[in-house]
Image (cartoon, rainbow, N blue to C red; front, side, top):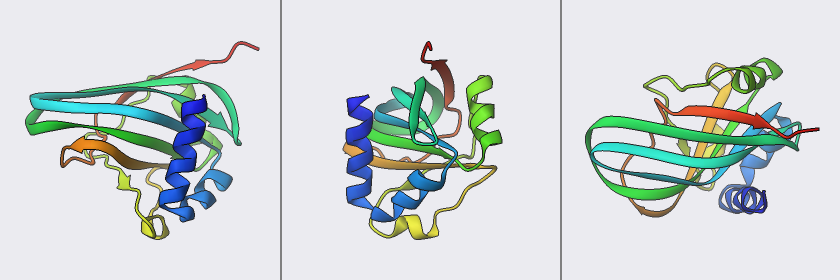
Length: 149
């Protein structure tokens, strides 16, 4: 959870315009350290925290496997914003998966001004280290585990 909070601060330092999404979204999932890599066959994985109305409600994980022309590896911070309660509930109640063409907006100063939701969901990514020219998130699959009350 501390890593997720630090990742949020890092994203806001990179693009303060993201604050409106953190404040106005029904929820968001922060993955502080998504590892991506590949050579022909690639993959990505990471663990994160799901927030509903700014309050942590559970843990989430992502996995991705893909085949195609690719080489390299990188670590990224990824945040998924849910515009509506319905979009958030869909993530929480199903084995959620992004369509093949889904991609992320790379966090840079001012980029969030033109960012928009697609089907109630928006993904922002901030490369931390490594080199891999790929902002795709298509094919990512998620699991959600609520905190026990």
